[in-house]
Image 1 (cartoon, rainbow, N blue to C red):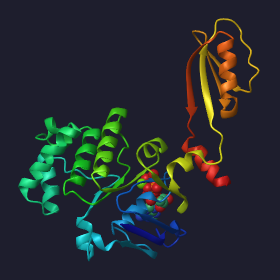
Image 2 (cartoon, rainbow, N blue to C red; image 1 turned 90 degrees about the horizontal axis):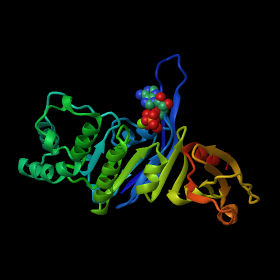
Image 3 (tube, rainbow, N blue to C red; image 1 turned 30 degrees about the horizontal axis):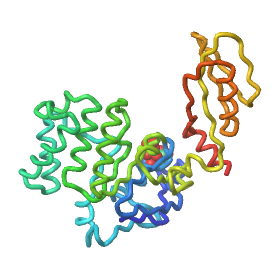
Image 4 (cartoon, rainbow, N blue to C red; image 1 turned 90 degrees about the vertical axis):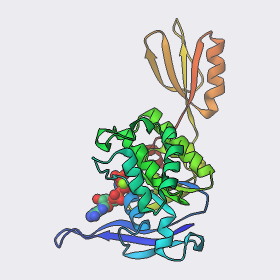
Length: 303
Ligand SMILES: Nc1ncnc2c1ncn2[C@@H]1O[C@H](COP(=O)(O)OP(=O)(O)OP(=O)(O)O)[C@@H](O)[C@H]1O
Ligand SMILES: [Mg+2]
């Protein structure tokens, strides 16, 4: 669907400052029908890459290629893309309906089709009650939803989202993720950036990881999260008296209400649980400790 080929982007801010290489020979592919996450810390080069795909800025080296199925020229190709920028601008005095009508008309959709799309999606985004209000009265989460609706209103084949989940509360994130999954299941290709590993882990099968303008990982999400490292688990339990544990463990924490939390590695998990149960304690939870973005960074850096 899309090939990002050997792209280098250098920003020259002024005559005195050193030129800054935001992207350094980055290549990846987004296959048709895939859902790919674009991961990286602040300043890694995600937005710059997406702007180059959208032709808002030009690369110094390399090129972006689209499948012939996307169209013969840029005008045809960009009609099949839905893009949600990192910081979309919303005309404050337009109502939700007027904004969606405006965005739909920009994509040359007939009015009837725009209305149909809004009728389908507005209830899913829980914004139908606000559609006749000006956008300046919307909360951040509501703007994010109306922005996403505008992104998919023309039923694009390729949906590119720059931090679509930022600023949403947990319920809002879940709802938006559900819609992204639904759109993807309907056959659309989705490429979205985030610096939150769990969002990508939950809904993507592949992840592209940028670090300081370089591609450091492109592959399955599972292998990124699990490669080479033994998993650690938290065991939570209640015990009235003092209890000792011979199975290997570390980081024993005590909390009010006789609550204890210990960390064990995968190999020691069963032995520790058996010993604790044998000692008569009440196990209240066993939890896999997921690596954080920092840990993955560290792991990738030291590989
Ligand atoms: N127009 C510009 N002029 C100069 N430097 C720029 C420009 N645009 C981006 N940069 C620099 O390029 C680097 C990459 O920026 P980019 O916005 O692509 O990062 P990002 O991965 O999207 O980060 P975030 O997670 O914070 O959105 C940053 O160091 C940024 O300062
Ligand atoms: Mg960005």
